[in-house]
Amino acid sequence: MSQDEGKGSDEIVAALEDCEQQVDQLKRENKLLRDASGTFGELAERLNASLASERRKNAERRAYPRSTEDRRHQEQPVGQSTRR
Image (cartoon, rainbow, N blue to C red; front, side, top):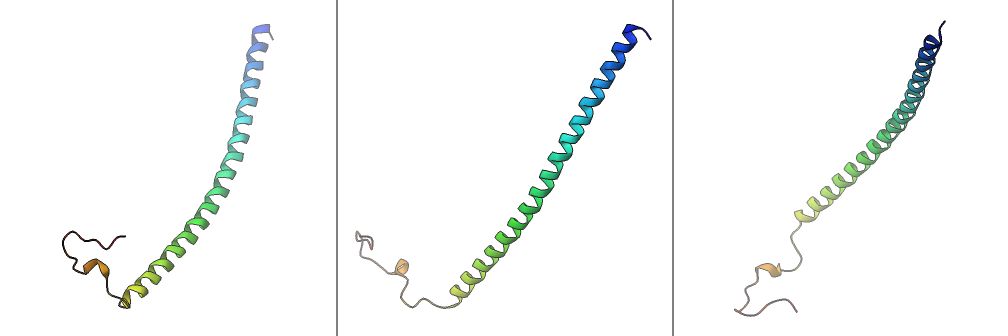
């Protein structure tokens, strides 16, 4: 085997080792991303349930008339405001 052939195989071995390291790194990143996506999905489900609960509460609240008059529709003399 000549020196050039040995150099070429050393480069191939180094490139192969680099590829193996990259594959290992990508596998670790993939696992982290999969774990994070599961956690994100759980968070999204909790948020969705919370929003649905709030919507139900607001719908129930709107089903009952106000106990006092709505001040937005009271007529005010021109130039007077209800703000203080």
